[in-house]
Length: 168
Length: 191
Image 1 (cartoon, each protein chain N blue to C red):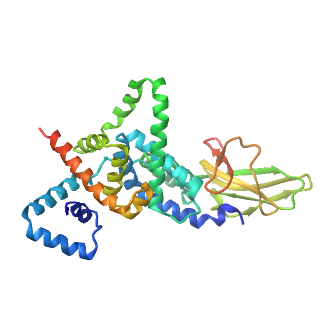
Image 2 (cartoon, rainbow over the protein chains, first blue to last red):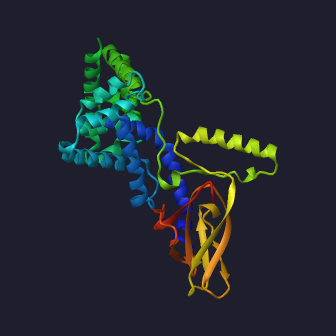
């Protein structure tokens, strides 16, 4: 029996898990990245990494988000190194093409999230996605659950301030 | 400090005792109630739909191939209907980057393996089930004719039951969903 056949059920389950989480994972990545194009790239990268490295493990949405976050962090580090060599306006042109894909009214939320630090943005994006518990977030981010409780609320207070400040 | 209980309430992270405490606090303190309401309204905004449409992803197994084996043309009327269906389906799925398969055509797989005592083929067109190939006389060739739809196909040969061999005549290869590579064959219009 070939390996592919032996893993067929596993792959089917994984495929279902990917599909079930696709919309929510994409929303999480939009909140993290702020742009459609980048969120799309990182979602592809996330699924590819999951397939390559973790396909034999139990299907886990928490692991999916962890991989997505690491893919995002890798991208931002790479971009920090490469940005010197890039034409900045070229990147913005791509972003503009997809700006219309963001729902009206959510642009302000993305701008508000963009003002948070990377860890805070990750924490609140995971929480409002509703797929992972405080416990899982604590494990993922290497902090205590008690700290997650307090910090989540502080971030919400901060977001409320930013969004109130945006209103005319 | 009970404020963070509002977030725990929103995130379904309160234990039973904490729920009792939360409800009592809401009952006792109007400012706390207003605060909780305000954060719930904020949460509705934060959790609302982000984008107009979620894009598809192109991971190997996410490529769905639609087979229309029942659409073999048997008469002119059926051919017209089949063509219309294929065009309509192609238009519907093209925005999702899916591979659309078309009516089948026969394809001959040939492999030169003089030392092998058994050669099988497994691909998306066999549902990844092994199908034995036929030895061509005593000259070392193995062959098999299979009906394939137009579009992309992935397959691998298996020698002696377990050794994976890529098709040396097919240059395009792709890492598969499992532990190896597959040959990628494109069956076009003229095939």
